[in-house]
Amino acid sequence: MDGYKEFTIQIKNLCKIDLANYKEKQMKRRIESLIRRNGLSDYDSYLKLLITSNKHLKEFMDYITINVSEFFRNPSQWSVLEHDILPALVSKKKHLKIWSSACAAGEEPYSLALLLAKMGILDNTDIIATDIDIKALEHARSGSYPQKSVVNIPGQLLDKFFLKNNDTFTLKEEIKKKIDFKILNLLDDRFPQQCDLILCRNVMIYFTEEAKDKLYKKFHDALVDEGILFVGSTEQIIMPQKYGFFSIRSFFYQKGKAS
Ligand SMILES: C[S@@+](CC[C@H](N)C(=O)[O-])C[C@H]1O[C@@H](n2cnc3c(N)ncnc32)[C@H](O)[C@@H]1O
Image (tube, rainbow, N blue to C red; front, top):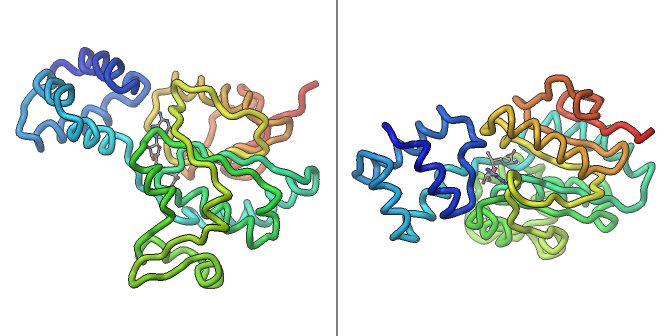
């Protein structure tokens, strides 16, 4: 389908998402399938629909942001976080600041909060969780998940920190209140600063190399010296030294000390 370039310019004006930073082939495939699903056959008429209908604009945002997530996604990496990374961080500092930077419907920051509660260090931690998708954030704030979403959560944590109502599991207030959910566009907005740990998992895969390059630099700046960046399982950084990072375990990068 023609007209993608013009569409990206108009979308940037309409909802501040710069599609030029997302891999073109993948994004085109997704949007074109959405265009067809709406009974249309070109970008121009789809754009007109988005301009006139909030409902369709929301559907578009929802579809292109891809909110798939899981509690304790890639469990072996969470085990490294629990047994190596977090103990090393708390041995150096009493109070930690952690940022889950593409938090989807909250599965990732809540996994983190549950882990910190288990380790007895939740009260000494500030957790910020951000995403570009307002609908995902609304879900995250509710803290409610169907049974199929909570299968990866260890039974003890599920019993202790969730309220069960039929097939719905809702996090208790003591966990929910620990997370500050906010809207943030990684490609456009200012990052939280002085973070000890940043999780940026399963979102970089959608971005172009140029966008990734900028983001690694911004993540580096957002961390304290020796702070850690935790990435997704297909998102290892090629040449981390280029950005001032050292690989300390697979999927974990440490910011070097300023000399
Ligand atoms: C596949 S989910 C990953 C969720 C979680 N980090 C995980 O690993 O399971 C990708 C998330 O990135 C968000 N996202 C996409 N583009 C973004 C952007 N420019 N800024 C912030 N979040 C973005 C989407 O809304 C979505 O919730």
